[in-house]
Length: 220
Image (cartoon, rainbow, N blue to C red; front, side, top):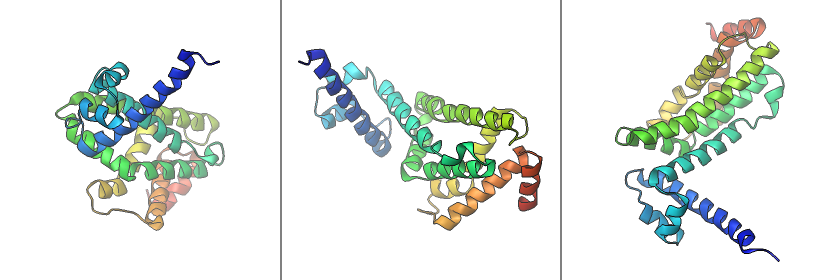
């Protein structure tokens, strides 16, 4: 027979998951400042006491949402079958995954939210940066360090390489989406951007052979 503790734990986990999903929707739709704990509790269907027992403040709830979302995004980005294979193919798969995430409707909405709210509520920007950008950079740095050790990339500061790669992926197409110049990109535009980013990155960080080929392609 299940004990009370065994049966209540899944319910608590389910309630926490429901709260995080509803809070995520509310933050993206209404912004941080306009989202209230009372509104979230009402949507979940429980009391504010239950909500506060899991998340003592709106800031802690926002951090939990950011933590969960960044974990999901990074897992999706690094889900690349070619990661251990030929370097250019691995980077191409990685770059495509990054672009698919940063150009998605949810990520564009999240980016706009953070930019608009961080001036008024600095902890929103700091929390999102630490859980999203910094965590992603550290994970990229580990991967690039492995590529350097294997000889695919030249020996360099792997964190700076990660920062350079992220700068490239949040460039041309990202700004067009962010500023609502275009609502969607077709596969041809995405393919061209992936090719440009990978070639530019390899021109700077690839081993002699990869860098030479990339420089010939880019004209750098």
